[in-house]
Length: 308
Image (cartoon, rainbow, N blue to C red; front, side, top):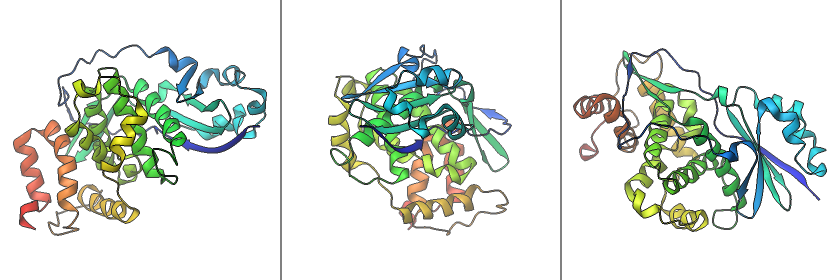
C-alpha cells in the first residue's frame, strides 16, 4: 500500500538583477573548485531507512519508471503533473508514503542561479554561487530526512518556514561531513541577500539558524561522523525558532529598510526587532562592504542594541 501525501518545493529559482559589485571571496577560507556532482544526483539516495529517487527533469519519463508500479499509478507522480508542479524551480521534492521509498526529487540544473544579488541604497551587491546544484540537492534530501523525523527527533507539526530552514540545517551537517563547511557561509550570504532583494524570500531565510550553527560548531567538531539524527536531536532545541508573528515583524522591517520606494531611513521603526536583524545581516554586510562600511550602514539604519 502506498499513498502520495504531500508536495513541497525547496530551492526556487530567483530572478537576478544587474549588479555593480561582486564579492570575490567568502568569509571563511575557500577552495572554490566545485567538486563534481555526486552520483546520487542521477539515481537513488538513502534517507534514513528508506530510499529516494532523484530524477533529472530532462529524463523524467524514463526516470519515473524506476518507481514501483503502485507509485507510478499515482496521478501526482505522472510526468505531466510533475512538470507542471516543477515550473521554473531548480529542484523540488515529492513526498510519498511508502514502506521503503521516502519520495522523489526532481532537479533541473540549468535553472540553478549562478549568483545572488541585493541592493543597499544605490549599490547592488552580489555573490557567485559555487557548487549550487549539489547544495540544492542536499537541501531537498534534507526535506525528506526531516519529514521522516517528525514526531521523533522533531515536532510532529512543522510550519512551511520551519521545513525550509531545517532543510538548510541538514545541508549544514552534510557540508561538515564532506569538509566543505565554507559553503555554509555562502548559503548564509545567499539567504540574507535574497531577503534584501525581496522580503518574500523570508520563506527560505535560514540565515538565523546557519549563523548560530557556524558560531557553535567548527569543521573539526563535526567531521567525526556524527549521524544526522543525533545532530538534529542535539541542535533543534537550541536553534532560533521564530513564530509567525516574529516573521511578520521581520518582513515589515525588511520591507521598510530595503523595499523599493524607501526614500529615507526611519531609525525607530520596529525598534524591538532591529538588533536581531542587524546581528543576522552583519556577517553578510561585512563580507560585501567591508567592516567599516558595514558598521556605518548599520548605524544609519538600525538602533544599536545598547541604546535600547
